[in-house]
Image (tube, rainbow, N blue to C red; front, side):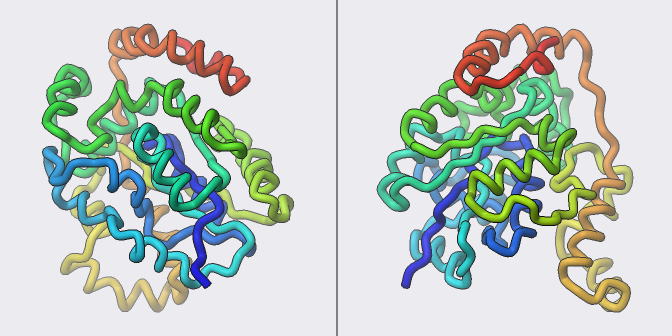
Amino acid sequence: MTVKPNFLIVGMAKCGTSSLAQYLQQHPDVFITKHKEPRYFSSQCMQFPMGGPKDKQVESWYVKDWDQYLKMFDSANEKAVGEASADTLYFHSCTIPLIKEKLGSPKIIIILRNPVKRAFSAYQHLIRDERESGSFEEALKNEPERIKNNYELIYHYKKVSQYYEPVKAFMDNFENVKVILNEDLQHDTANCIKEVFEFLDVEPDQEIQFDLRFNVSGKPKNRLLHESLQSENRIRKMVRPLARLLFPTEEKRKRMVTWLSGKNMNQLELNESTAKELYTFFQKDTEKLKDLIDKDLSQWKY
């Protein structure tokens, strides 16, 4: 019997989808693919190759074949089966019809974040991975040209942070849509996750470890350490025997890598005048979104 996902975390990028997925998969009745962000649905909507620095490397992460996508769920026998691809929401006009065609009406989870902080986090993510070198202000100025030149969506700083239209599209097309805020996930984590478990119709009072943040952006304090934690290299091969001795399970090693990665990051500071300009830019979109999702977004104001 072919297993298909019955829920999707569709985004938005740099809003906490990685952390949300890591928390949910600790539940014994929740299955989430080990492959982080398979991006099958968005891959059907995009033009390849993409045009940005290291975008060719990023392209290898996309699962473009339907049969290959389904294979990721072969071992699933949990009640809630899903995956998290943070760009599915952004490409809503194309992904929604595909989701309905392939999966019918799965439950949809959307996580959103203060749009200014999300955009700046995306910039820091690219600084972290050496895909951006100039200032944030230069990156914002270059955004229209980069979109025109088919850069990956993470370079679409302002456009990705305009949430109203894509969220409305998903709410109009699916019966079961849950929108959560990154701020709630950070500051009221246990209750936020409990609500998601209730939405997925699994036992809500499951004990979950919330001590780590995943996929943290910033400028690495030590570039060599960052590279060693993120990809296979000589140093990683050398320390692997010791790591396996000290942390005998894959889960413990994964948690240690996540902890070290976070500790190795310096957070950059957003220019005050740039922040003010961006808050003004997003104001109308935020007001419309507030009415749509019926949530207090006052913390998103300047």
